[in-house]
Amino acid sequence: MKLYSPDKSELMDVSSIERDGSDLVIKGKVFGAMPMTARLRPAEAKKALKLLDLKTALFILTLPFRN
Image 1 (tube, rainbow, N blue to C red):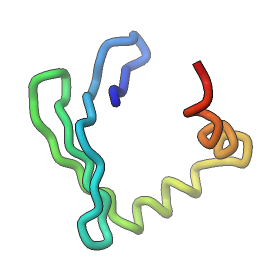
Image 2: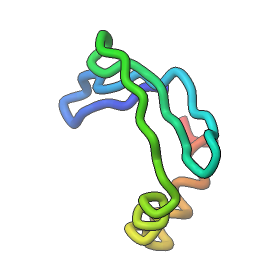
Image 3: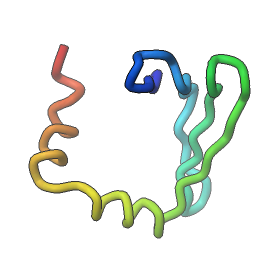
């Protein structure tokens, strides 16, 4: 999975998303070269969910079925 900036340049190439205890571990390369491992803790995931409104949450659910 790749994440892009507003100018459509590649920011991060995610190679894996795994569980480690209560955390979500995201591994990949930033800017195509620098390896990175990020951890998402439960408290931060709760904060992220609070940022979503119903319309955006529904969009995220339908995203895999879009072209």
